[in-house]
Length: 446
View 1 (cartoon, rainbow, N blue to C red):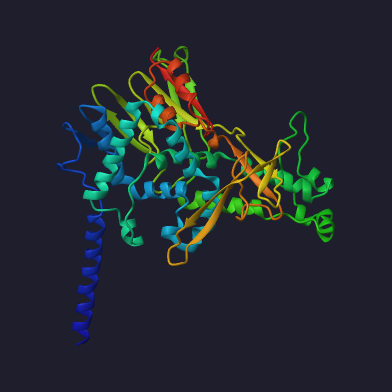
View 2: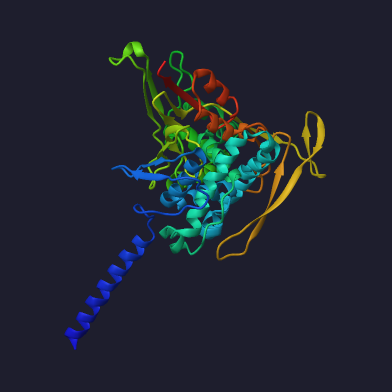
């Protein structure tokens, strides 16, 4: 009997192992064979190289974009859905209470709402071909969702992703900009320290050597007698900016941030080949999967080897036989915080005049818990972050951010950037985008 039980357990274990193996592999995309992709007007071939990068060839650009959307969804659909949920402030729909505070912050920052407004305002002025290609890309994504097995993460979390919208793809630029928004941490921190600490302690933080007066050191303040003495007097650190750092670290550790990079360009006179060389290192944080999606697109009218952000149909970096460009993070200060004065009538003081606040109420769906409602309030400067862990008790802080500029048309900027042919085209493309702050490195055969 004992031998029989052991044999049965062994067989059962093998069944579980092999069953799990085949189930996981059944969730993988199809890499070989033929598929009928809805909407295609011609033959499209997808070849993967030794690193798994798809090389897509089609007879026209719309078919290229449909195939790109289909292939990208097969490789990165769950990542695309996570990025969309950051834009919408909908992480709690799948993660529950643990992400509610982040959803509140993301809603108040209006990442999605702003792009809805841009789409409504500028949709009729967008280049028709750009809109057609965006729609073709999303058709490819949705075709994958409708006809192919969903990645394993959706099974584990027991949900199906909803269709995607162009506004959600555009809103990812807000997450990039948020990754770069160091002023959201540093400006309040400096103000808070100035308000809470005496000059003697602040002076310990600053190095004044030669002409460099802005470098910050990390002194052992807690061990100093001056620190202990002033703590007894009631000088304390506000905690709200630490909570923002907590949100920043959550995005970094679980969802990946776009932060840090460098780039080199060599002129033709400096190279043995007589051609310019561009080398780029966008060293964003490691994540699995990585934040960039590589793909090579080729048709008779258009060719690019691009580095795409998942869900975005136009590459942020790319090259072909005529030109190449790359991006690095520009640590510019494109954000200010305003301490607002608000009266009992729901008005804010703006340029010595009382102005009505704009209010919207949104519902946040929380998995396995009761939904909550949050007020999204805007001042003439920008949205308030009150009533979140990232506001300051007793103060009303509004964010004035270039992301919210009414003409921040990042979709057109990326679209035109991927179709530049000469340097003047580059300048034309870049004028459409207000944020995220990027440095552009460029070379061409001329």
